[in-house]
Length: 173
Image (cartoon, rainbow, N blue to C red; front, top):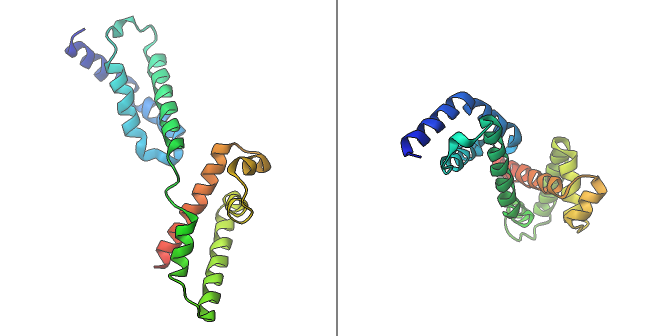
């Protein structure tokens, strides 16, 4: 197969199913919508590697099967990435050094309480996950079992809590 016929195949595919592919990826990546164009490009690159595109019986079905595989690999890579915000960093940022002034310590405690109330209002499950993990020292799998959700969902709750806290601290500065 020539490069021109491969290119024509992809251009036609993109014209007829490009928006559907974008929506398909966007719906499944609600929290990572910025990655949709990159994943769509990866789908097209994989299709470009096909030597005999005319042997595909159902082109849209094949397109979305490839997209499903790309999404699966994307999720596996994302699951392997450690969380970028750590609770200890947030704690250190709130305390801004070891101040032994009792008034400062009270202010820090009040700030922690205010952050906790805000997080609870924002997402009770994220708050519960953070408290069980940080205060009770529970592993994420045990938190998942207690909340009746998947391990991945607990990671999302914890990430949501940490991002929320980091954003509030950034706003306060």
